Image (cartoon, rainbow, N blue to C red; front, top):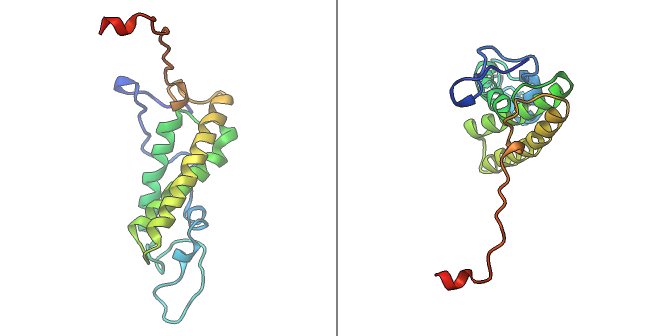
Length: 161
């Protein structure tokens, strides 16, 4: 699926989620402790997804998920089908980090969010490389930044100061 380009060759993010966008349960796998039923007293059951009995609710978590996948698409350009699972994983890690930051439960949650972001950063680098190798991307990925080279300095250069 080619990513249409806007002004200054910036990708235009589509209105609807791509096929590889993570689902609630995929994101919940990264933060299972946040899927505990918070409505029913005395219940300590992991639900494995976000819904009306969790904090955040399924709707609140979905909004954060919907905010996570566009950054992955913007970093990679068009994503080929072979790397959709890795793209889903990167977006799920980003969404999980956003959920942990938005709904902290204790002092360690900011560190957990940072660890999830670090894992997403590492996987994003692998995703960009794999996507480019598979023929995806838009030619503007971060791996294609210019490399500058300058001639060696002349030995009499200090005399010109």
